[in-house]
Length: 227
Image 1 (cartoon, one colour):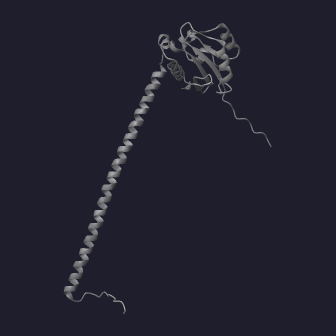
Image 2: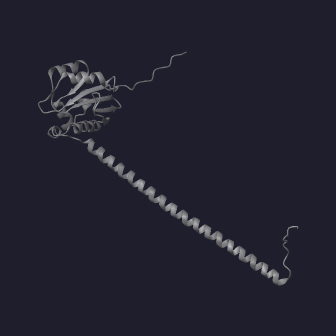
Image 3: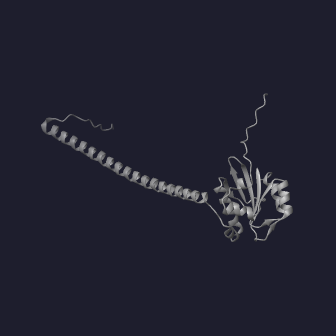
């Protein structure tokens, strides 16, 4: 049995032609309404997405602005930082290390506190564009306490070989034994005792001026040898 085939024929007579026109108009109207509805939905969806994106970007921008203001406020504070010795004496060991870090930042060093268990005689590490890399060993003690030569030996043994430092410094709010000062002067381990700390922290004398650190020339890459 062969399949039934449907064939379209042209409308016959005026009534069929009118009916065909009405059907065509209805179909076109339906299509227009459908397209319009899809377009409105797309526009509304785009507006929602754009609104959400604006809220997110505005939030991120506000957070970055607050962070920038905070950094500027910290920089302005550190630029005029002065810490009395009486306040330094009341600090904990860790607070003393952070105070030394802030003093270095005030003086133009990019510094960070690194002191912890197993720090290999380095509590603060800093870098200066003209004076190289510095390592500070902090010794917070009583006013009458003194740092002995053993500390100087440790710093000398690790500052350059382990931390790549150009400058090694031991800082205390107390003092140094005579042997420690003499050994440090002989082996380029700088020392900052209570009097020097007062000049650095209270009077605002930069550490590199206080210790008369030389300006170092940038290291040039080694020239290639001709093969």
